Length: 345
Ligand code: XUL
Ligand code: MN
Image 1 (cartoon, rainbow, N blue to C red):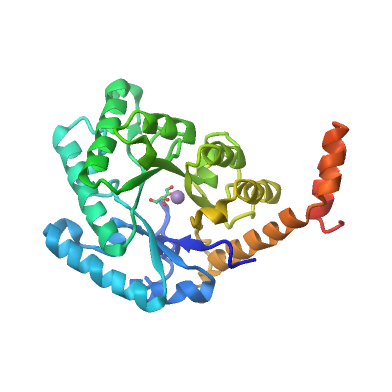
Image 2: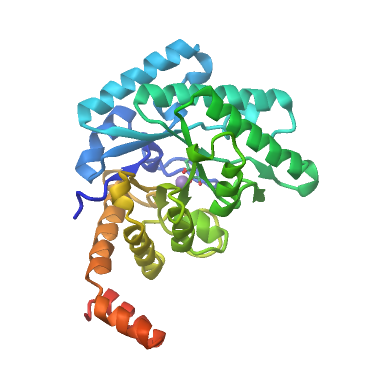
């Protein structure tokens, strides 16, 4: 069963535990060491920010960036891993302080495009055709600071420029409604896919849905996934969990709401996700209190929970489901689901 679904995570998912209120509590793990952990943890693909692959990229010429990325590709090959996507990290550099593609400063917008082009070069060197855009600072702290209509047009221009830079690159937008901004542009998959239809090549525009981001938007993650799946636009997922409307928690998949997690696995099954060849990404974070030697458990545990829930989805009695639906007895269906999850059927 595990072989059908293939799993991925990013190097940022093994981290030092710093949060806005305190510094690191664990020593950094070198990238080469992280790469060696993937297979042991049950994962087959690596998700990258551009500077996860080439940390000093802002100081390097394009050809040097490509050479460094090619060395990372050899590292992946050596471990039998593939790169799933590259995401330009536009939110840490001073030039992106007020947004990148939607900055009011044209010089910043120009930088954002050049940085995205370097990210595409890295993606090509790593052997992936997918660019993920988490639009971190594309939004506002106060509404009056930007013309939001212009901002959306800037986003469309940027997507078009990216699509034109490389005729094979595909873009998966990872929507998130807030954090770091008060309000982010393109907060849901509906917004992301709608703007995709306006680009020069809608076929190369899709989405990545993260559980926590959908919950922060007050939406059901499995329905967000269903929306994208119905159009063949679910190109990756960031499964995790979120306990209510607070900071983006990136908890272990299923840890806060097992039933919602079950429904996310169910919708991936209904949508034939594994047959698309796409990966199940786990964007999860270890608790700050976790000791270093067990600070990868959140990854293997999330994968294990996914596989347990997959078994639950596949063994749910179909006849009961059909009968309850035929009788419109959703109370009975709900109890059947709960009892199944509780191991009573
Ligand atoms: C931010 C988030 C990012 C993206 C990758 O909330 O989820 O980790 O997934 O840039
Ligand atoms: Mn994410």
